[in-house]
Length: 311
Image 1 (cartoon, rainbow, N blue to C red):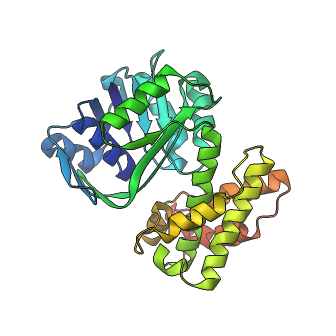
Image 2 (image 1 turned 60 degrees about the vertical axis):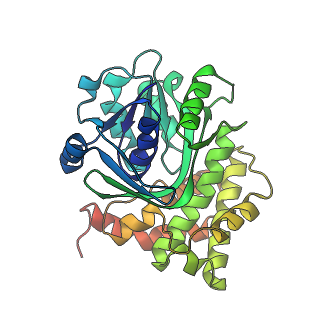
Image 3 (image 1 turned 180 degrees about the vertical axis):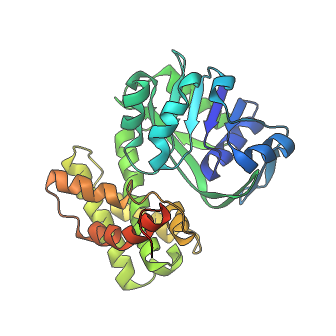
């Protein structure tokens, strides 16, 4: 397949690197020093599953020059999706599919509004990886995993084809019966650990251990569970129990990407995670006091990172 990776950070860099390594025609969309490093020296990935490099690697900052592709894998931050959708238009032909791997649950609808629902799959990933330097990705935790599927739940050859590409690359991948349930299951997990981690300034091993912060984590998940059910997304009854078991098996030093961005003073996905829970809760009449607390506490730092508040 001819695949464009739009956003070659930790997520896009890792999965794009694995796909390129397996022989897919991958074009990395990047910019600045990161782009120049990839063009000059390839893409280096240090991984808990084994280090590798893509040399040479195709990289560009110009979607127009890349032209039409079979698939676009979107690896930008959730707050960059609308801008990315406009920028990727030259790569989206009649049969092109777009797979968003953002945190949150709003990206498929945002992409569909700009590119057309016929181009958009639902998608999610699990991985702890980040851009460590120009041309250099570090995968530090969580077994990489991708789920994808049609938003209306129908089986399709195009989803199967992309699934097979990930399988050839050695990436664990699945096509769930209901991608909406899978998206909300991931959202319940990531918004909770992101918010609690960012407020406590502690890695997962610390806040899952203390009874007080562990209870806050569970309460944050419970709020998302109720919001999902109210929206008609039928998360299984044991969703929180399974997610807590997953969290208890994570590396103690893992921190979520939103948490990392806040620690380092960068704009984060606060609005797309805890902020989204607050917004949806208000619309549905569902109380979300934990997410209200997390969002409100983190908002001044978010505003400062975006140049909207000085202190």
